[in-house]
Length: 107
Image (cartoon, rainbow, N blue to C red):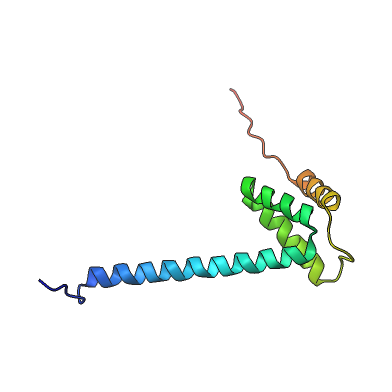
């Protein structure tokens, strides 16, 4: 019995699959562009440290990467960022982070 390609559920599934595949490909391209730009901005040890941060804290990685690329594009980085400079930047960013506290009020 031949398959009928006119099944609306099958067509919807293929369309959703195609869209998901395109989105994944777009993300991979963006990630590759980001890594290429970071390699221009960071020396090897700083780049490796930033990739380790990516594994543990994606949000912090993206924040630092965005900041470094912005500084680079503005011409505010005179040389490649090395590991001690990256550590200093990270400590500055982490010290600015506000910890939220939950307090319980008893009657």
